[in-house]
Image (cartoon, rainbow, N blue to C red; front, side, top):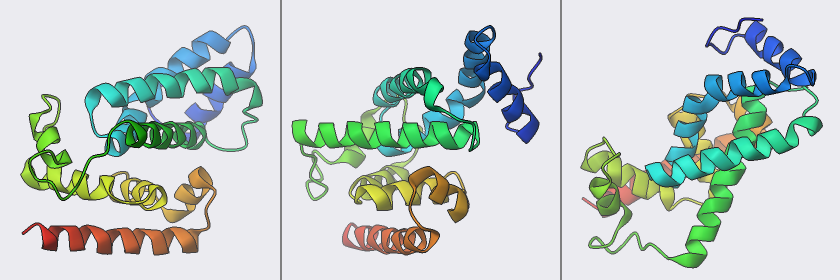
Length: 189
């Protein structure tokens, strides 16, 4: 069964069929990893920020997905299920990092923007680095909804399925996040 590298509904159904059959499970999983790795990597990277951390979290995401295949009933799209795992893994990673080291957004010498500019895998400019610093300072829900809406251009209905949060609450969180980010840039002019 050939699967094109796209996210069409038919492809999703074909992957689900492969994943549901023990004889084609491994092939289905390999195709799923191939099809969704890049999209998930960028979702994760926008939360954890560094390439190395994003790679680690992506690997953990697929390990969790593999271990959780038996509990996936196919009610949602695969990308919705995988995104939920990826976002939860990213947020768990960030919580653990906060307990290890605290990054101050007020200290320009050791700030996140400077760390990103030094990252060889970061291809943005100073403004993008500051945006990432502002996003990193948001509470988990606001950070998640902002990154999914702003970067991935997801509809609130899709974000709602991923996060299990109402669309109204997501809209409010997004607008609060935008205000906080705007305030961050005004403070750092």
